[in-house]
Image: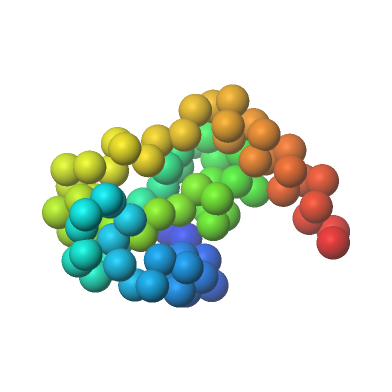
Amino acid sequence: MKGFPDEVKRDIFECQNGICRVLNCYEPIVDFHHKLSQSKVNKRLYPLFINSPFNCVGLCRDCHTNRSHLFRVTEKEAEIYERFLNQNKND
C-alpha cells in the first residue's frame, strides 16, 4: 500500500521536532502511522484524508508497534476531515 507523500512526512517530522508523539517518549521518528487505516474501503470513502497530514503521526519503532492504537480516529472524525479537505481543495 502507498504511504504518505514525502511532503507530509517532512511536515509531520518538522511539526513534531523529529520526536515520537507518544507522551514521555523522546525517541526519534522512524515511522509514519496512519491514524485511520488505508484499507480499500477507507481509501474509497476518505480519499483526501487518508494520506493527509491530519491522518499522520510520527512514531519511533517501538511506539509504532505497541502504541499506535492511541492515535486512532473514528469514522465520524474522518468524515469531518474529508469534508473540510474537499471544501478547501481548490484554495
